[in-house]
Length: 341
Image (tube, rainbow, N blue to C red; front, top):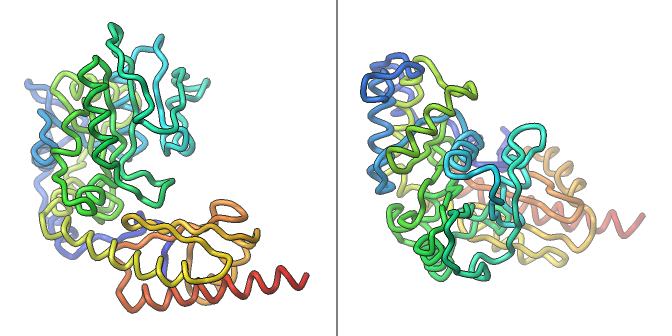
């Protein structure tokens, strides 16, 4: 049996999700009613629930987080104004489409700490992109000082989009409600298909006008789906309270791994929610990955010195314990092999 710790995107749907998919009442999500909303009733229910949880007026079901982030930013921004984006943001370093010259080519400014962005009144509504949790910082939720600064920027006339791919991890990790975390955001995207465990899809939430513009953009960019209600039904099951609260188990198991891995000489481990970032003093990350593969464990090497490990619903306490020991053993073995060369 292989224990896959590369990402929470490998989470499989629950029996409840699969059952809801089989029983879903569906329609054509690519077609809209007179009120501008989807003809698919299951999609409408999912959008209503997502809007309710985030405290926004409306929501849009999209195929992926990348799609949702791109739509949100396009709907809020003007091509002539630079977008402010975190220097290690997923939307900048991995998704890239928004800033690609061959695609949308938006100009951008990178920032290191959101709290260092000057608060100044603006007549042209600059767009700020924030990420929560911060995937490049061991899944760190934005803290209260950062969210308060975002609120000040919003009051000064900025537009705010949040890449909340793991927004519910942030809420469970901090004890804050999703609605309060995103209260200063014009739009927020969150993924259904990571820790929440649905097979497909993400949600973009915001005011009715912005979501209306995003719906038009979604169709223009080929993101309109047909009988999407089958997967929307699974997404609705994923947003049930017990499934959200269960994310605390992922966080606890991540800490188990973190504590074992961090005890190894030559390894520095960080963990905030369900992501463990490991920095190695020697360039042996790929060797560690290969060694673990032979033992039935899959993790990722981000560079020669960096490993990333994620927990999810498919990992038990026992698997987390054994995986931590296996990673630690392989780090030691890889370092020894490197020194002997």
